Image (cartoon, rainbow, N blue to C red):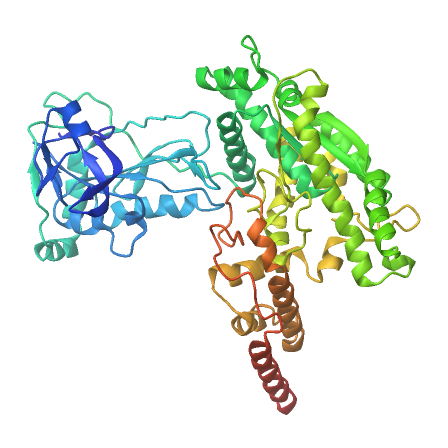
Amino acid sequence: MSLASANFSPFFCRPVMHRNVRYNCRVIFLNKHVEEYLLPRIIQEVTGQDTVPFGDAVLATKDTCLGTEICEELWAPNSPHIEMGLDGVEIFTNSSGSHHVLRKAHTRVDLVNSATAKNGGIYILSNQKGCDGDRLYYDGCAMISMNGETVAQGSQFSLDDVEVLVATLDLEDVRSYRAEISSRNLAASKVNPFPRIKVNFALSCSDDLSVPICVPIQWRHHSPEEEICLGPACWLWDYLRRSKQAGFLLPLSGGIDSSATACIVYSMCRQVCLAVKNGNAEVLTDARKIVHDETYVPEDPQEFCKRVFTTCYMASENSSQDTRNRAKLLAEQIGSYHINLNIDAAVKAIVGIFSMVTGRTPCFSVYGGSRRENLALQNVQARVRMVLAYLFAQLTLWTRGMPGGLLVLGSANVDESLRGYLTKYDCSSADINPIGGISKTDLKNFIQYCIENFQLTALRSIMAAPPTAELEPLMDGQVSQTDEADMGMTYAELSIYGKLRKIAKAGPYSMFCKLINLWKEICTPREVASKVKHFFRMYSVNRHKMTTLTPSYHAENYSPDDNRFDLRPFLYNTTWSWQFRCIDNQVNILCFFDVFV
């Protein structure tokens, strides 16, 4: 019986310059390889070696054979583990840097299990954890698989910097599994053999018959709502502790987006308290540094939230009492330090300067003003809120006799950014945005999750209210402006547009062709054409806003973030004359066909 303990991992990844060419390498702490590589002097002084072997090879121990893949090679159509497995490699390792995206863990797990199901073997996947200083969060999710089944699962979201998975497996099970795959024998006879580096040790021992063998387990996947609850929360904690700031400030409007952001911060506080309770000394040290108290122990999430999270409701004459009350009640339930203020004096002062200089006073549409006047007056309110957010972030703790400053959180979702439904340099402009890569539909589901799991009853009225910017005058004290009416499209439609535009690489005509089939039960071709044209007009007119988009947690592959994920132009011909003409021609053909039939 040959038992292998699957915690063997004498590898790490690093860039290597060899013959003036850069390689992404797995460094293996063993002897011999396929080509001599001259070590840098600083490494020579540490190891006492002048050179090490360099190349593509596998390790042959006394009892088995090990191979390695690097990160994305697992996802490649012709992954190295295929030929390695045919060449007799029984254990595969992968030190991955796979970032979190909603619903991605299923694919990662399936790929690993599929790698060992097709060809037999043991696959050991480790993955980076935490925020690496940018928009990505690496979610851990280490695992060990054998013969198509998971035998060990690591946590997907955790504040622990290091996690070790160990599994004891029988190598004879791999050999028996492979012996049953008759087609493998023919394929193995044709494979190009890998250079084998023989090493003088074994992973098993002769007296291991009494060692218990790990059995397959059922992978426990998080729901998308749990992923939103945990992933951005861990990302925020990493960003907060590494930036050495004293907490966050959020303009809390009483709507779904800012409320979801507040709930994520509350989830972060819960994760911190849980980690400290479980004995994580590093998290405790970081928490004490953040609150500037060397004796502090975060035990209650609401109490910790009061120390590190400030929410601010910025009312105007266009704000309703309902949203004010919703924001106040949510702040009370999560425990944030809450501020109420009114921006009317600042707005009137700015408009007054314009009137004094030009002799003209702009008006809202309901009072006879033009569309330009109406939009300008909305933008003034939005931009005043951004300025005040940063002022209060810098000085709120000073007024409370506490040291440090606060990071400003944005709360524009991915669909609004795609459509450009935001004011450039308003409260969407912040230091970081935990929901900037999450759709409105997913945020609504997350809010429901928080109601059920955190008992945040204030969220019920927030869920029931129609999304609104509250930038236009009220009608009889009630909100007259809604987001979907303003945008001319629903949030559900926006999610579909986003996936087709970014992931499917669809332009106007391609999108139209896909949607006339997808929406054939609810829209005529002419209606689809109108919707697609409206989206692309708004998309192209507002694309410039993506160049200043607040760095956001990356959670969707259709993120319009111009700085990293969507490198398309930000200046388009907004008439799309050729594409729209093609759409019109196709609509005429379809309509003629319908009439003829």
